[in-house]
Length: 124
Image (cartoon, rainbow, N blue to C red; front, side, top):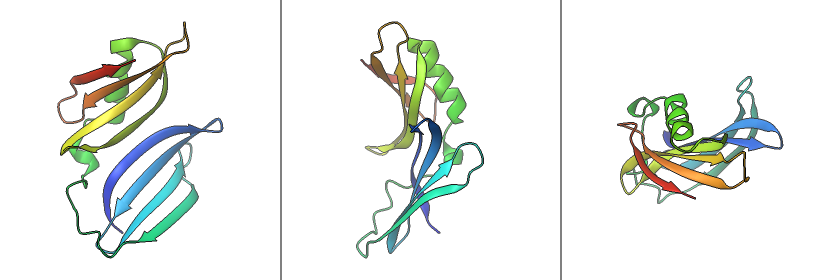
């Protein structure tokens, strides 16, 4: 039970996994969920009595859908999806989408404003 602080899709040993980070007044909670069937594969809870900071919390409904952010990143730089993260950075809700270039194998990070869908930064 808590508020969302980070949501990530990552390739974990050949399996796509959602990493969900939540927090409430007294603890932080992380769970890994299979992208195939949403079964939990790893759960961690950490007590944090000083965890009164709510500026990193958000609702997924405040962001554009992740598939739109991924498509924007692929349209911007091409390549293959390596994963993405949705969280707040300096109060701005944003997606960080990692893409690998099929030609040279280099990674590119595309930062997308999660509220407007606009590309904020491309980092090779």
